[in-house]
Length: 431
Image (cartoon, rainbow, N blue to C red):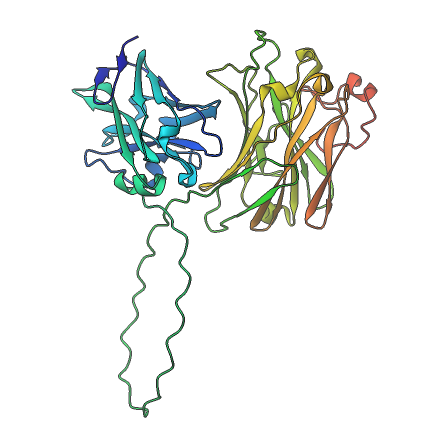
């Protein structure tokens, strides 16, 4: 495998590509890697060409953020699906809130299409870097390592590539003193008022990370914009050299306004066009170091309006008995909640070790959607050892209480075995 240093380039093989960025970890700071689709001017066509944590797939999936864990970020790129007019895919790294310079990591590595590259970081004071670019030359795609730095993080780098970044609104200026009133005089008739089209909203870069049980954060939903709230669970291979115990499942219980509960899982996928206005996007059965396991649930942003009241959701990660006595905590499950550039990450450190063996369900978070407000609360609760009972929620004002007395549910529904197991007596409306 050839290795490139800043300024060097190499031809890429044809076909779809996996791009791996090895950026390491800085204690107390968070490194975000993004991709920008730019034209010959070096600018994006619009904010929709920025692939980042708040917009993980762009150009119909031609470029997608595949996952981040353990100091590594992976993208997938399908050059054959890159839109006409886009000449480069530019990869960048930024340090969230400028909490540290890139000199805190020895180097940043890149792997794509059998080509590797590295950017030495010793002595760097910058908090944003252009790492590399994939570009077209004579009908073929190539990769170039760049290493250009910026001070000021993503807020400074993004405009360089044509992305307008939302800034916090400044405090309003004090009102001027009232002038002495002048004698009234005749006013000419006002000219007809012409309404100008509102400017496009800049991309939002709001990101919150919850790490402590009970911590919470809120996202305001845009009724006029609609769209979906994407909930993504990610886990990694625990390194025990077994390939048969890395199959986790993202599951959700949905508390309807009438008090009934709806079950959502790969076996009961739901749908966005009718109740429950949420859907599971499919089962993933394995995870590796380079390809973390990922399952996704999408929720209609207007779910509370469509169902006629507040809606609660409890999200859990499940490992079946057939996976053996693996600790789910050793697979480091995390969850993100994303809506229109707003991201809430749930990264609770579940206890590992002997006490975690035989625990099949970990509750990561609950979500309460009340009209146009979405509240996420980190949970950190686990089921009792050996129990297949499912998490159940009841609403107490603005709080969701989690218990483990929901009936066991397996991939083929509530089987006879499930009825014989445990004491879960609460029944789901759709199981």
